[in-house]
Image: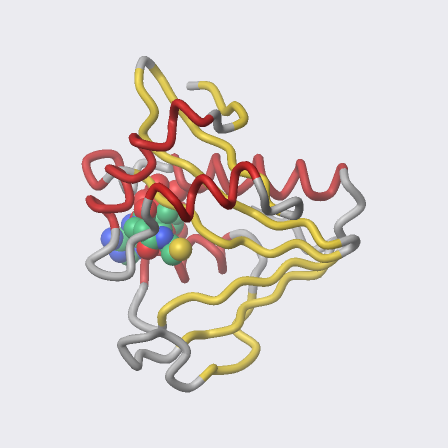
Length: 149
Ligand SMILES: CC(C)(COP(=O)(O)OP(=O)(O)OC[C@H]1O[C@@H](n2cnc3c(N)ncnc32)[C@H](O)[C@@H]1OP(=O)(O)O)[C@@H](O)C(=O)NCCC(=O)NCCS
């Protein structure tokens, strides 16, 4: 398995991963293209072995890091790959002097919450009606020095 920066030629695959992983509000090609080419804070990495089967998008804003998106194709979920990809992203952010990390996650997304808690994130507050369909989000935070995954 290798983790490498996303290229424009990966974007159709990322859209397919989105469709397979998210029931609603999937990111489309244009959103990924904006993220890759125009959002100066965004970093997208893909994980592949023969083919790309997952990606992570994280933003670095000076000392703060935000996990914007992570997804692994359903057939390969729950095999430790999300954990590898998240760990790699955290390392890259630390190398860029990030000292605090944040993310929002649907309160119903048990797999993602487990992944984040395992990597030192804790639930800090609930953002009521954060998602367009009305679901609440947890704001989860991690401070540097808490890596224990
Ligand atoms: C969230 C996601 C990225 C996790 O990646 P993954 O490769 O499946 O996760 P891992 O195999 O590394 O597992 C990490 C932890 O989550 C747990 N987990 C994974 N799938 C789970 C599930 N379906 N239910 C409960 N826990 C689950 C694992 O058991 C593991 O914890 P453990 O080591 O204590 O057992 C993946 O499930 C996914 O792509 N989901 C759809 C997209 C999504 O919801 N993204 C997050 C919001 S942006």
